[in-house]
Image 1: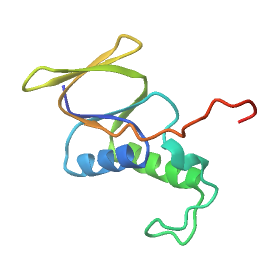
Image 2: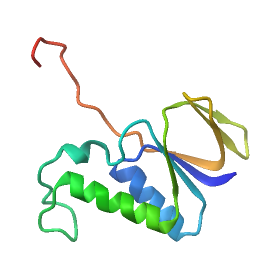
Image 3: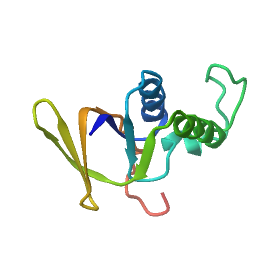
Length: 120
C-alpha cells in the first residue's frame, strides 16, 4: 500500500510527488500519456521561479528527473476508477491493475478544447 497515489503527471502532479517524497511518503504517480502535461508543448516559459527562460519540455524533463531521484514510482496507465474504502482508496487502471493508497491526489490537468472543424 502506498501513502499517496497521484493521478496526473503534469506540473501539479509532479510537484505533489516531489513534496510527498520530501515528507518521506511512498508515492505512485500515474499518467495516461507522457509525463509533463500541457507544459511540454510550450516553446518558452518565462514565469517559472528559478528560470529566466526555459522550454516547457525541458522544464517537464527536470521535474520528472527530480521526481525519480526522490524515489517516487511512476507508471504510464489510464486510471478508470477510484474506490473509497474508508481508510484506504483503490485506484483501478484500464490495464486492470489496482493500487492501494491511504490518499489519492487527482491532478489530471486540463485539455485544449476543440471545435471539431476541418483542419482545426
